[in-house]
Image (cartoon, helix red, strand yellow):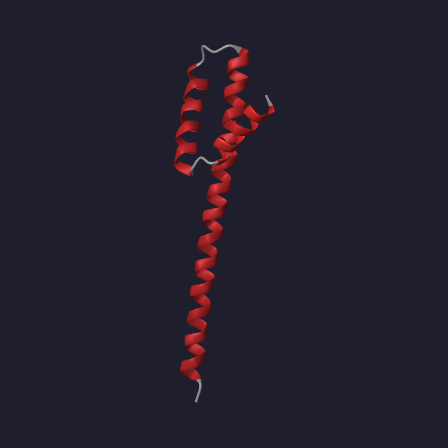
Length: 87
């Protein structure tokens, strides 16, 4: 049982942003449509929470990469300005 849970968690973590987002949209659609039992609704809600966390981590990672690239670009520009001002 534990290995099955571990495998499911690993598959969930391996999802890309778009895959997690698309599955989250489907989970929300199913919850909004209703007609599910309490247990099914709770399982969908929990899955939605997992998917939302994955999306947030992917977006946070993308933001960090962008920030790092912009900081590097700013540092290069500052270095170029400093070199052009030198006698």
